[in-house]
Image 1 (tube, helix red, strand yellow):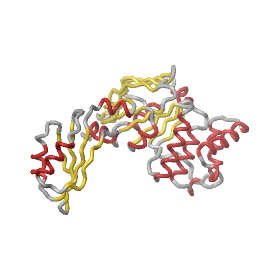
Image 2 (image 1 turned 180 degrees about the vertical axis):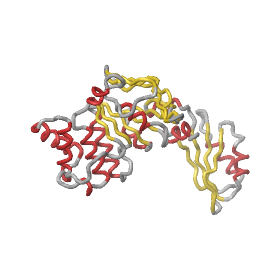
Image 3 (image 1 turned 180 degrees about the horizontal axis):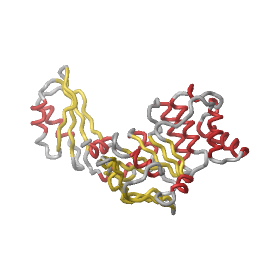
Image 4 (image 1 turned 30 degrees about the vertical axis):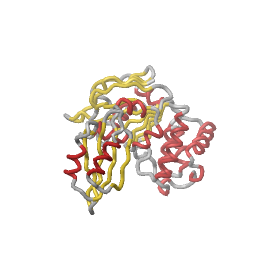
Length: 311
């Protein structure tokens, strides 16, 4: 449905987006992850024809952003990170204004606003000034705005930014319901959010794509590495490191915290063998009091940190 080819955008001499290419299928919920400044928002602004690329192209269905920006805008609903609302207006009046801008006739507008109010969970605030709403409700109103013309594609830039945990779950559920009927593209730096919501994840770092696939695919591609987390009482880290690094499967030993006689660290291990028995043998031999000891499989957070650690 969407084809992005060799997309590049410079700000001065700095490439915010650097020659990226990928496709988005119809009905897919795609999550774009990356640290701050990675190029997520710039990519979305080019996709929605808000910005022009320095080079490269985007095809939405059969429309090209260079030749058919108006047609593409008709297909897309866009919610930027800060919803562009008029704070002095009542929620209903604001949505009615959006419907008028979209040239939706009166009877159809009333029906559509009622439908969106139920879908986005804003029935109880329809006659309140937008300025009096919580951040969560403002995001919902912005989502209703983006969906007013029933677009085929919904683009959401950090839709849960600044929300509390309950509001995040509510917005996530709304996005999942919408994703059953529409193509959804969302950016986030909340890894659990992407893992719970998205069918596919694209990780961007310094303007380039460094990973692309489902959560399970990314974990498989990352290999069979795993971590063993250990907390000891007493001892010196240098002695512990020297004793444990002789185990062949142990590739790296990283100190996380050391205070009040307690030392927390993790071992990055490779291969299919479970080396915990070998590690425990070393700990027992040195009589180090063991407080915590468990294996942690690869997570999306581990993969994200490794792929973007240069940032």
